[in-house]
Image (cartoon, rainbow, N blue to C red; front, side):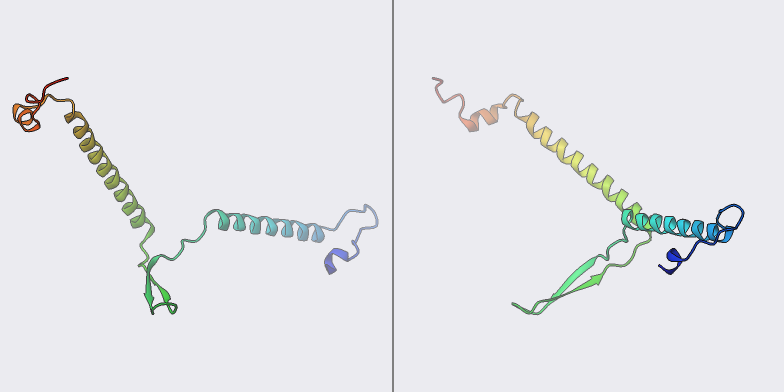
Length: 127
């Protein structure tokens, strides 16, 4: 505030600001820009939240929950585990899909004589 209200020192001949004041201004603008970039980075990439297991103690209305933090895994290992989980889940889904499809296809095959016998298809008169 005091700096903003200070009279602008001017040279008598040109009315231009002295280089010291220009440098101060550039420094301030650069500082503001750096702070802005830091702030945006903090917003876009938030710190990883602490994860772990909640341990509850007490009973009825006197529960207390404490976070038992999970061990911090290095970033590379964490990504490797996520990739492994992704491929595992994808493979599991593919297997389940194939099993469902086999069940679906089995409804189209002709019945064996044993199945016809058990279902009493030949004994039942068709209407």
